[in-house]
Image (cartoon, rainbow, N blue to C red; front, side, top):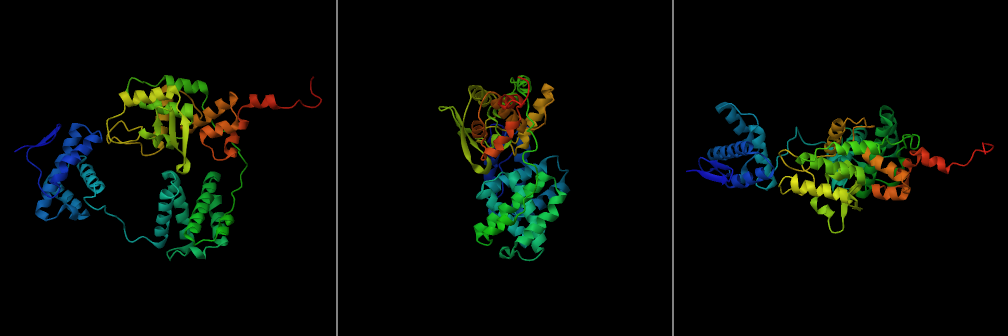
Length: 412
């Protein structure tokens, strides 16, 4: 008796075992992820085989544990040669059941976390849930703080009220000379953030925050490396908008070039962030702050072209999606940088960098040349401090020359 899973797949017999009822929903989830028929068949067949194998183990769906998955894989390897991708496919079935709350996720660890690890984990949760920081920022902060706590408390208990100014100063003085100035500054920022967290818990004195040393460096020593307008036009002209990926990449590049969005801001965009009636875009910036930006017609048209003729059909609400299965939003800002890097190579453009941020710098410089004020540029780019925008004041030498006073005694 055959069993119809969906319009793409028919099994030779109905699924058996405690997980049989989840085979059809799992197939729908796999289709929604954009997998092709061959991949769908592989995933459903191994999921059905695993459920059938559980029949002899007298395990209910909610009782399936890590040992069952591991024992089944050993059983498969003994019985026949494992095909490529089968272990990964079974892992996807396990992840799906976890998402649906059918089974509990397993915590795999070599042993119980130490006091330092537990404190660092709580700090990470605070940064993610309370501060809404970007994942990359959280990783850097937690890494530095973990080193600081280990240096101060070792393998013993973490007693935050015992922290003193000397502990903070000694750690920074030891670590900062080994780091690049930007990393050293990030170290001190991470420590201040952790001490703020300690104040939030009521376990650290507020005056301890001011004890974190300042890493000395020249103010604004570097001019931002900006891509030129001609290079931007060349990059955009070389995108193949006849393909789905090309339409997606063209819309991403326009958001970089016309609105100066950060790569992470593009990654986090969702369908609901576009107000087509008001021609505006809601952008989630640093720290989870929202800002409303006008949506230029050129950018809007590119997004519409992608939505209508390029974006895969899926329940995912992210605006820009991967082109290959699993179909989902980009995992991080590096995906946008990859789009930029490929676009530069395709257009044979020798840009200042290979990253996405140069478009943001290029837009700021171009706006400055056309008479925009630093306040207007800062508002568009979402700068919290005027000093951040002030770095662009020294970029355009021709504009600065018009402001220079005549040299005393110079030519008349």
